[in-house]
Length: 463
Image (tube, rainbow, N blue to C red; front, side):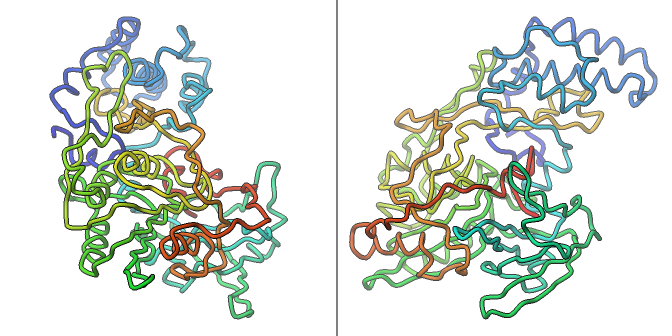
């Protein structure tokens, strides 16, 4: 494959290393003089980390790399005064195609690697607003500080650091002021538990390994076994080559052993992750007759056309499914949508919940192709290509609509057959149709947790 192991769990990583190495050497002519200038300045300095030159060199590296790799590089401004931008983030924002790009970001190689293998620092929970306007825990990672303290989905949060939830409202949502993702930072939460009692807990942030599978069970419906998998992020298992998820493999092996004939995958909070893990999941789900068929086609900018390729299904395992149910929300993004899109031409795909986020484009980190960024520990992750399924469906920037709208039953624990979205999927499996829609239409969410995050954290939103 040609890439260093740390890059193998990046989203949407091209597979042909030979092509990539050749492509990496081919810069656009309008960036040639800029690159030569950067190299000459660097060559004159004994200390590459001299702060007098680092700022301009990194900015030049960002500009040149965007010109070479950015999917919308034809939308970039022709001239940019690099010194006019105070921060690297300000520069990147000026270079982005604002009409569509909500995702290109800067980070560090280490932060990127840890995020895509689930190595987090924090409390380890998510929360969201219910239809009644109350705030509930939506998920909790097992080994995180919150998980070790016994927190559960469905607990209502009434106070944060002694203040009522409404005190944290802003014009665009909430600002809970929980502090940076650093070990030792504590916050105090007051919960109303399902049994009506209250509990106040002080919890300190710490490093932990996030689990991608939040819940797995088998539900009997009309004498048939239905698998239910709550999948929270397409994270890879650190150290595995090729890039894979041990959690996904073990979960699907168990469902296969239990002889399921229907499958519900809950992606309602899944913001994306590794496309290689998405491929792993799809290759287990796809019907055998689709083996060898096109999974997706990717398209890069005009400088990288030689990297455009078809990716094909390679059926794995013995699951035999003709249809699949996905539970979604506006927090279902990126690799979640890629999975839905790629399976649709070959299976009866039903979506339950609310429409998805709308991210039909992908990215991979490119500091390995710019030594000035790499030497200064700057990781640039710009949108680099789009994907289309076998039917050519590609531009779903508005997200995928659902077949059946249902509220997020945040107050229900995972696997509860009465939870509205799971209940709707089970009703279809039992009767062949969705239940009658309630006269009260589900309200569009007034605030989504994913909106509180930017850059790398937007892919894996968690507190």
